[in-house]
Image 1: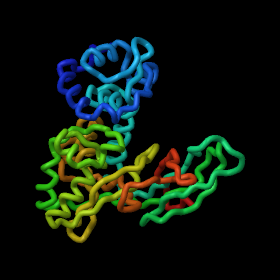
Image 2: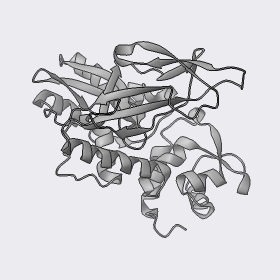
Image 3: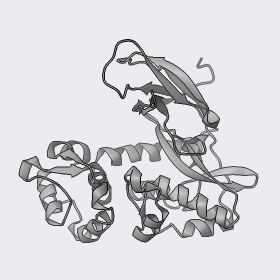
Image 4: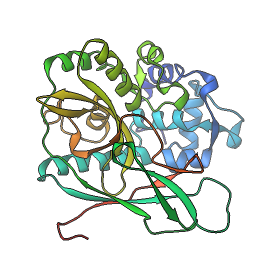
Length: 306
């Protein structure tokens, strides 16, 4: 059904989609996954294709790009997996900001990225300050092989004026999930006016450094229940504290996850759900140098948890 979709927004949205170069796309998503994962029905897919959605194949054999579908689902307000995930992030942000520096345990469940083999898998797990810890897991293991025991910080200073002025320059960017090959291209970001959190974080750091601000790149975990996820953001030195800042994700949660706009104004830190591991984008877990898929089940813990 397309009755709940704002069809008048489609021409502008499709122009944004086409700002991503065609050769960056990977047409791997069939119609059944477009419906189950992104809530894009065959009827809606027909409308999107008529508006110019890139695809290959015809009819029921059409294949789409996952980034395109994810972006369209978010911007069209569909109840997709990504939108529901974003709601869980907003819920955790609200809760963590109200608690007194909550303690959280994040389990680590890496999956082998190479064909099945005998014996356990050896992973290299990212730890604080960029250190790597060797961990061992059975290929079909269901229990965490390690944990991150994290004490989150509930309250953070607001950005100083110079950092706010810098942040204002990316306030009009549209949140778009981007392929890795174009995510770090600053020229593309500022020309196309679309970006994801990594794009904006890297731009804020490079431009902030050029202007003499104390700013650094951060990579770590977006710590949310029930599952944490790897994430990138910028940090500004404010009142002697490195303050995490992610304007794009904050805006996305305000737009699509019901985050209160007055309480969570554009200059407020989402630090209550962030845990820094290092200062560059990298793998959380690797297996013989290959990027290992990872699941990070997360829950609050009491002081008595071992």
